[in-house]
Image 1 (cartoon, rainbow, N blue to C red):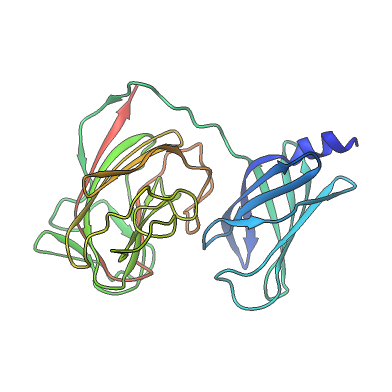
Image 2: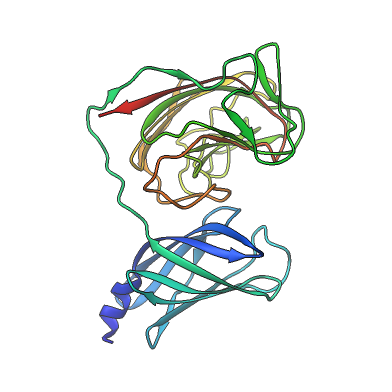
Length: 292
């Protein structure tokens, strides 16, 4: 196989599924050129943020790379090997504990952006009275009191029963001091909800698309105050208005973020509220879907 063709077979973005300890874990891989002959990339595991791959090595129709631990248990670097499998990829991952797991991958789909979209009728995903339309992914710590959907402590994530493709969503929320949460679009792209007032903006802080997109300024309010996100997602293109200021404007989300429900980017998905990192409360979640 000619080297240029060998590179071409692997260059691109890939939605992965890792078969690990009886679970199918969503994951994401990007391979791209740096200069003429070197391949580099980025990788997103089932949790954590996108991390750089310093070099993707090719040899005899296979590729390999390694990355140091991020939030994984302490141990060795994670080592990946892969090869073509029809139109997709397959391979193995050696985890930080030394165990080896299989994975498969398909090319990430191109998600269409629509100019001048037509919007449908707004839908109140939280009715202010109970948790109708939402399911806890585990033992439920969520409660509704005085019109507030509240997670008083770290526990289960919450996922909506309704799924959406393109939409506008208005969210009103608050977090206590030092807390950490997230709001997942289509269940795959996390918008950070964190106590970050006064910090420099970053993709892993307030208003960022976790590990991928950095807000142009930090507009977080003090902990304990109600805050708002107004988010528009069409295809991969996202705009985030936080507390009345546009902090991300029509930027493409490269791929799924850590903690995604799945890696099926071409399909509609639900909203997921992160409840496994800290306390968080919501009083409004209004979705306006795009209609054809």
